[in-house]
Length: 173
Image 1 (cartoon, rainbow, N blue to C red):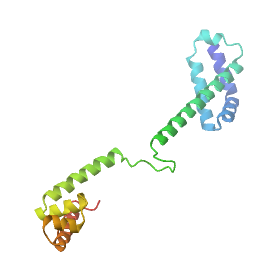
Image 2: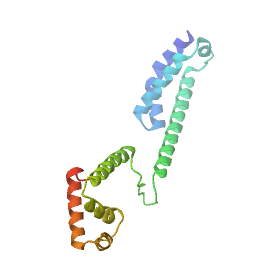
Image 3: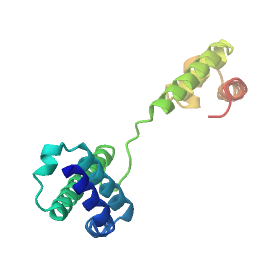
Image 4: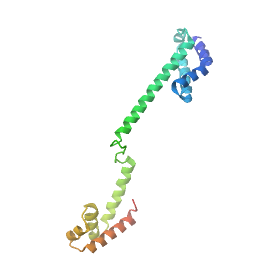
């Protein structure tokens, strides 16, 4: 029956407890949640433990204050954890994020690259060679022409045809 006495005290004190918790937490929603947590804790008490409570009102407020403190600590820990995560994902003080792509972007890029490689493999050999030397190896068109033993105009045509073919086969990035 001692639990019933605590339950009655909670019902009577609930509006004041919510105001008390709102002042402590700054949030009426959090205060409502914490007041409900007080109720749940009361319901989980044994009759023997409830019988030891001499001042139910003080006991309820102490329990509410402890729950508010625990919630505040948990919120600070979560904030610190989020801040640490954001710091780990930042490269410099300007707040520029790392260049590392998300897992989805990495998979998408890999699939796109496979399509590009397959499209290059289907190009005429001279066009594919000119494209690889210029776009992948970074050689100028004049250097590609010299290496392939063709005119610069021919290299321009090979690269132009290669880009058109890639656009048709793979699409725009």
